[in-house]
Image 1: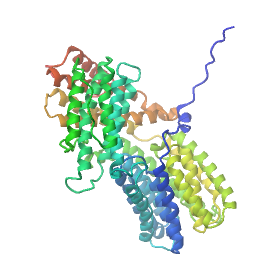
Image 2: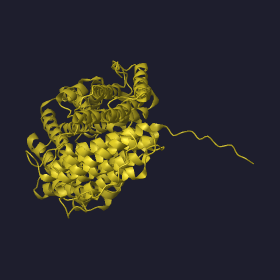
Image 3: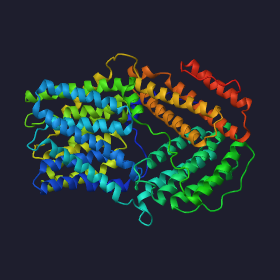
Image 4: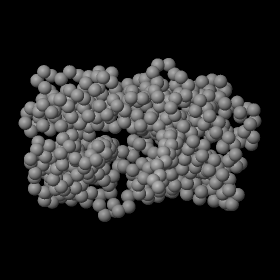
Length: 618
């Protein structure tokens, strides 16, 4: 007997996101740094007779560990250093505000700080991490009055974060001891670009081509970030640096040709991907590429691919950095102001201010009502609210669920360990273990919360306070309820401002790229920089849209239809790239190119997006 299939209800996106975790190999180098950071910082403070400062140094190292992601050493200077500086400023401001202001002015001051930090967080990932550490450290400073002056506490926090950053810069990664390990992160990032180009060429004409093109964009973004940090020498840089810049620049025309092949959708010979694969191996091994496969020049995009391979091989041999500076357009103060003061920055800043200010007011009221019992500090509630209100960590309902579950698990685990472990040695060991686990736990917010809860509770007890598991669970659940409420409050203006701001930036970059290509400019480096900006802003918009779609329906509905706009922009940018390659080869566009351009622009116009008009010649 045939049985009809059972239709099972789909798991809501916000719930599915809570169980999602990033995959990949264990980052053993980051695990080692985590073990050598927070625990030793705490131990150093204990041995010096300044346990309170040691606790702050360990907190600084822990927060820096949460930003210690895979990448290059130069990129880590900004990714770890800027948030650490913001945290030190927050701790300094919070300490003096807590000492000099009464409850109401202090609450208003913290809410104003939340408004500022929330707006700044809209600028980008590093700014968002800086805003988080600024507010968390300000809550700790205001909520934990101590005998030490604010400047000493800020220096201790900065020392802990600086210690982890020093480990990140100095320690070699496994397997890199035989070469110049200073650039292992940059080499891997550039090699991944060539592998992604090969992957896209191999996928052309198949079902995976769209995913392969997205993977190429992600690899280019990562390499661009890896090479964009501070140079190890002030002026010309070392020969290894120049070589890496030249190799990255040589990948840009290859990526352009591969994207044109993706747009055409016609299968290509298998050997077309062998060249980029050999270049990827050459970057990883810091060696020459050797002989490349014979060219196959039956179409403009294939001719462009082969020409780019020849130029890349020449750049690999010379390594003179002739194309250095093609890392894309740097986003300066003007971009930061637009993001912070735009609709997304304003909306997010107001929500952060409400959450941070309200949680600080509630925490102080509970503290004065002696709800905290033996615990003299009220920082946990506002600090928890800061993490919960951050959209970087997932949809609102998902991160609330993860935070609640992770805190309960971590508090229960710590309560059991606190009975068994000797003090203070056992607490130091526990901090070391948790510091080592953070780089692995960061792949899921609930796991990260559980590990961080155990670590912080160990630091609290090491600082001389009694066991705090039960009160921390109650405060976390209260913060969850508060953030859920504020997250669903109606706001002035149009909702979903962050998504729409990113879409507007992607639209502007796409049109700038299109106008440059149709303007028949011979400035190819400028074209490649514009192409990078178009794809990068589009990827950022895609990420924001996917995150918004996974919110509860009351929030997700505000950005309905934005995914269609992003898809139309993606088709426009892909078509523009195909046009650029074809114009290089023949000097004119085919009717197919013109039709696809007009089709993409018409679709955007129907979606209400302002579009440029094609020149009559097109």
